[in-house]
Amino acid sequence: MIRISAKWTERIAFFFLLVSTLIIIIPVILITVMIIQKGLPAMNLEFLTESPRLGMRAGGIFPAILGTVYLVLGTMVFALPIGILAAIYLSEYARDNWLTRAIDLAIVNLAGVPSVVYGLFGLGLFVIFLNFGTSILAGSLTLAIMSLPVIITASREALGTVPQSFREVSLALGATRWQTIRRVVLPNALPGIMTGTVLALSRAAGETAPILFTVAAFYLPKLPQSVFDQCMALPYHLYVIATQVPKIKPHVQYGTALVLIVMVLVMNLSAILIRAHFRKKKHW
Amino acid sequence: MEKKKKIEIRDLSVLYGGEEALRHVNLDILEREIMSVIGPANSGKTSLLRTLNRLNDRVSNAKVRGEILIDGQSVYKKILPDVLRRRMGMIFALPIPLPLSIYDNIAYGPRVHGIHQKSVLDRKVEESLQEAFLWDEVKDRLNLPAMKLSGGQQQRLCIARALAVEPEIILYDEPCSGLDPLSTAKVEETMVRLKSRYTQILVTNNTKQAARVGERTAFFLMGELVEVDATDKIFTVPTDKRTEDYVSGRFG
Image (cartoon, rainbow over all chains, first blue to last red; front, top):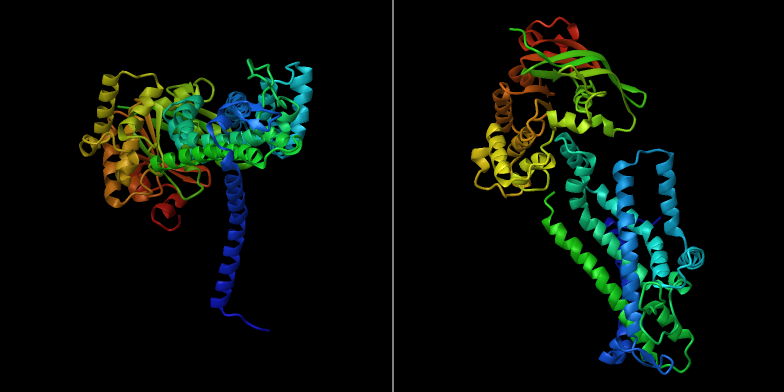
């Protein structure tokens, strides 16, 4: 048997670890470069601020951008308070019993449900049963339900990083449980909660399947006027112009993809900045 | 003059799951005394403190039997936990400043209890820090993060923070286990000086500390109260053989 010296095993291990890491980076770089290269020619003021013309082949994608912004805001309005409050309950109040365990299990499973199933669920519950129609409201609620497990899990993790000893100090000073949460736990968990939430929302911004049946419109001549209106959205618009519109110039498709990616990246970047900012201020 | 009983512990047993941490403990703590509680690891000392101020409520499988009275009032039946804890400050084994400034640490308790007037808070912060003998060391840098203080200063900050809510009783859970001898001496000095105003219970692993600070000493072993008596007696002529073995350093 050949024995390889420790020095060589070290080198071999280093080589494979490095190669694996580089393999991860390659698709990221390729996607980014390709989309920027092909999408950049589409970028101009008209593209960002005007409605599509000539069956999507010309004009801009402003209604889709606006629609995605509406949907992200709508998702935030519904998912943020419910997600954070549920996470607080589960981390700070719930006792370890069968109900808590059942809820835990439900959340884990909810996170694993394919997004198209959320779309169908939203269609059944919000669009048809609650009679919201295909609307921003129905779409936001569907996206919110899809984001909840992620927001809850991230928030619970953030709450979990606040040392138990802080809670005990506060309680020992005669603070109630809610005062302790409000004054000690939440301020210290907030950066983590915000980071997790923004990441969840940026996912929601890019989803197609959940909005397919609940809100997204192929083409709308005018902008939505209320939450009960349909809207266009970037991911669905991209799907439409990539598959349903013949003889479209590729730079329109890639331009749309570029705008979507930039929006998602900006959100992710802001999450990273929030985290970095608070980490500097943390003294424990 | 006979001192008044501040805390009466009657047939107290504490269980975690099926495991008994305290067994049928009967103990009176007198007003304005320092009661040292000694014993080896797992003897139930910390459980005793956490049962007194009901921090054990947080442990889902903790069960408490028996009765604890403060000024004749039942802790588990008559007093809400937050009201109880306000009357009973606690100093933990490691100094745990909240991630706030020195000032905000001390003001935390009063603010929680509804005091927001700046002048009142200012006065409370100063008084508490002076009572804990930390004022002179920090008065010029009250806005410094409390985590920047040295370990001994942090622990005295924790004492000041507990004093700011004007408790009647202070519980110390091995307060000097992470401190160097000099800081320890300062914390002990603080305890002795606070004697005139507060009832204090000092749980400690350090028998010498118990001897230095406590007027009476209780010796716990495996969840049972073996013996309680004047500190001098416990350390010179204990009644129980096990106490003698422990204080003379034969085990523990």
